[in-house]
Every structure is written in C-alpha cells, then in structure tokens.
Length: 204
Image 1: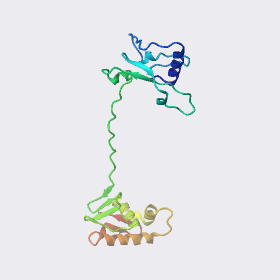
Image 2: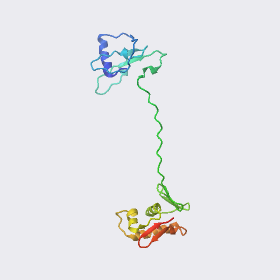
Image 3: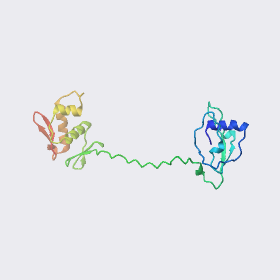
Image 4: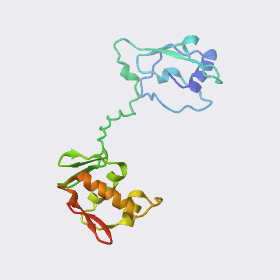
C-alpha cells in the first residue's frame, strides 16, 4: 500500500487514464522510494511480481480527524507466494538484544568476628544473636564498628550520629554508650572502651 499522497495521486490519475489490471515490470523494482508532492505514482510499480490490486471499500479505510479522505487498495498475492515477499529487502532484521545483567549490588553487611552489622536490614548481631537496638543505638554502634581502633570525641559522635542540628552535650553520648555496653553483654561490653578526657573507641 502506498502512502497517503501517492495513493491519492494515483486515484486522481485513475479517473482520467485507467491503469492496466496487472502489467508488471520485468526489470528491478524498488518497493520503497520517495514520492514528490505532484508526482503521480503507479501502484503497480510498488507491487511484488505476480500480485494484482483492487480499490479497497471505503468503509475499510480509516478516517483521520482533520485529514482528507484516504484511498486504499487491496493487494492480491498468489496462494503459493510467501507473504515475506512484501518485506523491504533493504531493511535488516535487528538481532535480539542481549539480556541486561543486573548490576552487582554492594554488600550491606559489615563488621568483624564480634559484631555483624547489616545496614540494609538495620540489624546488629553478636554471637549470632540480633540485638534489640533503638535507631540511635544502631547508628552509634554501626559507626564505631565501621572505624575500629579509632578514637572518637563526644563532639564528633554527636555531629556524626545525631547530626549538626542536635542540641545536647557529651552526656547524651555517655548514656547511649552505657546502653550499648549492657546490650553487648558482660562478655563483650569491653569492646567499647573509654578514652579518658577524649571519648570512645571500638576494639574488637
């Protein structure tokens, strides 16, 4: 089927000079090509060998809002001819795209032999048991475990864990450290050590 311009032009030309029913060319045929605005295209030049055409019933041609009526054609192909003959020969068939492999996600589990921190699940385990921690207790323990043997001042811990907008003093840190030590248990409470006049450090 030709495009709207070529079909309409062919229809107007057919009223003055009817085309033969099936005069097919024997030379090379281009099924897709550009059509000038005022060019009268011969529909038979666009058909594959052995095919004929008939005007399509007007009720079978779609109407586009705001556009002039379109003229359609029915293409008749011999029964022994494969429909693939209508496919443009110059357009390659794209190869199927390779499946996209999901990007490997970074591990959310950190820690050591003593404390295991899972930031995605927001859980902390000691000796295989999950600790019952509040939000700030988990954040404080995760920060200490992520930086073992590093000494943190109380002001640094307030800024990092509680945030810059927190109003309080080092006593808040002392209270949460005491709670963490109780939850770590008597066997492991010494992992969080006090550095006199400075702050705390985690030593697994």
